[in-house]
Image (cartoon, rainbow, N blue to C red):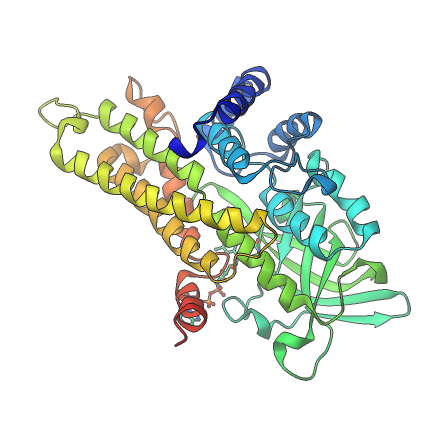
Length: 393
Ligand SMILES: Cc1cc2nc3c(=O)[nH]c(=O)nc-3n(C[C@H](O)[C@H](O)[C@H](O)COP(=O)(O)OP(=O)(O)OC[C@H]3O[C@@H](n4cnc5c(N)ncnc54)[C@H](O)[C@@H]3O)c2cc1C
């Protein structure tokens, strides 16, 4: 807390709290506590409130509609919204599509798409992975060919998070069939309502339907939907994935989870009726998670400061992704161990009595967090990036 303990930042924190007290209603809080994949209307309602206040995208530059905060204010905002259990917003639009369009998009693209993200009017999905191109993304086979003033796209994408709620997709496709695989990729914006696009739900173990397969059959988009330069898609994708990895570290939400874990330890009792929190092994576990969190938080703050100074995070993003995702999994695994049999039931509010509130959402978070070491580039791939670019191996 010391870093943020100045009169200006205390006043800023109070301003955020006042906003949350006024605008974050009980329905939004309960939805956030109970699940990870909120309905579009819930996320849109919260995003619209933030957009009206000028706080729709804390990490965007003021010239693009961001509030112009420094990293300290941005981090305070993340912390306060996490601790108030505010919805996360459309992560794909806010953290991936938006920053990519700000960096590489044309003025017309920025004018067309950024306001919709800021105000929760348009949602986005990411069309990168394919059935045979996940870790080896550069081998993707979806093609885009220029016909007159239109691109014609054919192929198949998979694992589209939120594809069923999205209006727009940023898509990586092959425009040059020859040469190095990485050199032949380009980035596009594709309207999800176009004919020739067909979505199929993929059901997962946590809450059912949040990801999708997408079949793309002769879809036509205007030539102007190419983002940046033709053949530069790999470079844009790498920058975008690095931003995704920093965001995936989820420091503020993990901090909130560790506090919730402490509450859970106070609520649960052992066979003799003593609170788990009195057990030295439980306290050691909490101390170890907290120490790992503090290390993660300071590393995240360092990278955030670099980003705010206009520098891309580079391989440091890979270290944050590994440490952040592993810590998120350890936190929910700890909760599941303490909950015991009660932790096996997927529905929140599984029983009655004082346990209910503290137990809500842990099972869903635990199941969904199997994915955090896989998506945005698996942790094994991040280790290869670190070995090559940081250690020179
Ligand atoms: C729930 C969920 C949501 C997702 N959302 C999206 C999305 O919105 N948009 C999108 O484009 N993608 C999305 N993804 C896809 C995600 O990015 C890929 O799953 C990920 O990149 C891994 O690719 P893969 O599944 O093909 O596994 P593979 O690449 O087949 O890997 C399988 C295993 O082998 C390991 N492995 C592979 N290559 C190597 C290597 N060279 N060295 C060491 N180990 C290796 C991997 O670490 C992994 O453990 C999502 C995935 C999931 C599960």
